[in-house]
Each structure stands twice: as structure tokens, then as C-alpha cells.
Length: 306
Image 1 (cartoon, rainbow, N blue to C red):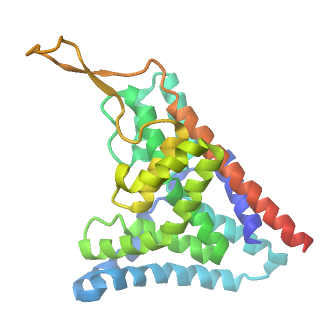
Image 2 (image 1 turned 135 degrees about the horizontal axis):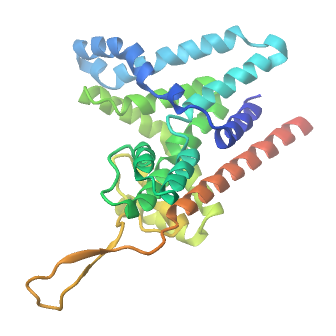
Image 3 (image 1 turned 90 degrees about the vertical axis):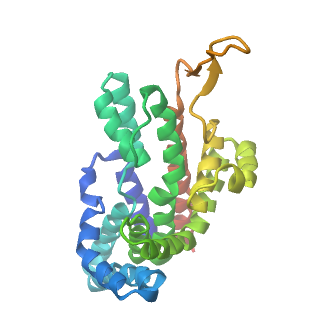
């Protein structure tokens, strides 16, 4: 049942144009923010890993109770629908392929205002200062965050069910908390544990659907070349960029206008006339999803045949 729910959720995620606001984390944070403040006020271990575990357990219990209550309703159709809904929420808050497609359409139409909103959602920060830099910045962000927004929620959903998907989603939300450093570090520790194996599955998928040799080479140097706050993000960034054939860091090459020794040398940004990084990233993530769906379908057929 979980495999079928995963296939349906991935298909809806890819082809349906849904309102993204329904899975924004603001409501989740608001509902549990009071408890977070109580835990932080008590201090000690509660303002750290233990407190993060408490806040993760509560939504997990809620999802488990609902799943248990509707178990078997209408020949399992309620279970299936609930699994699809929870997994789709856990794949948020951004539908990466749909957002990248909208950015590409907006840039092609010259609508930089609309494109900048999509870029901001993808990179989770202010866009680079020049629109020419946006496609590559978005491509980097997409391959780096594909673990949080695709593989890891799917992995834990298949392993544990809806509880696994929602646990990962809640951990990913609380690790970005801006108020309490101890609590945030506890959530980041949980995230590092939960993201470790899925990140390596994603890196393997990048190798299979992208540039195999380049991805393997990037994998070996990822801890040094692509160091990030989260190790899994650095691995996904390095291997994803290798699969795309782009550098994981520099957006452009700085060259000098003046001659050698000129005191008035000024650096200028040299940007290629056509940067297809955005299209390549969309294609790469599509291939990753096709690979995932194909593997899920094979497993499901094997179980039915057994």
C-alpha cells in the first residue's frame, strides 16, 4: 500500500498544479511554538536534543493515531488517500520542478519580478543581484535540497509509513528555528541522522541518471570541496552539480579589463550567453523521479508475484 501511495504522490507532485501554501510550515510551527518555549524555558537537555525529540514525537503520534483509526476503511482506500496526503505534505514546502518551470517561463517572458519570487523560494534567500545568475543558483539549490524535498521523506515513508514521512518533515522544519540555538542544534543532530542514508541514495541516483564518472569523483571530494552546514547537503550539492556538469560554487568567472600591471584594473563578470542549468536541473530531477518510480513499481510487482 505504501508503494502505491508513493507512486501516486510522486505523479501528483510532478503533474498537478497545486496551491503550495497548504504545506507551508507556518501553521505547524504556530501550533507547537508554545510547547517549544516551555521546553526552552526549563533549560538543560530540554533546550536541545531531548526537546527536539519531544516536539517531533507529538505530530508523529497524531499521524499514527489517525492512520490506526482509519485502518481498513473502505477496503484500504482511506489508508491509501491518507498516505498520499501525508507524503505530499512531507515533500514540501516547495515543488521544485514546478517552481523551476515557472521561473523558466517568467524569465523567457522577461518577467523578472515573478521569476525572483520563484528563485527566492528555491534558494531560501534573496536572489543573486543579476538575473543572469539565477538559473545556475536555482539549479544548485535544487540538487542540494532534493534530499529534503524528495528522497528522504520518501525513504522514511516507505520504511515506516506516514509516521516516518511526517517525522522527517518536522525535523527539517525545526532545524531552521531561529530563536533557540540549543533546541536548533538538537534538531540539526536529528536531521543529520535521518538524512545520512537518503543523501547517499540520492547521490547514487545522480550517478545513475547523470554523469557517472564525474559524480563518483565528486562524491570522494565532497567533504572538502562542498562543505555545508549539513554534511548531507554538501554531498548532494557536489554530486548533483557533477551530474549537471556545473561548478558547485562560482556563478561566473572574474576577468580583468585592463592590461597586466594596470593600476585601474577592474574585475568584470563574464557570463555565458545562454545558461541551460535550469533546464538541465529540471531534466535531472525528472530522471531521478522516473528512476524512483520504476524501482518502486518493480518492487510492487515482485511482491504481488511472490
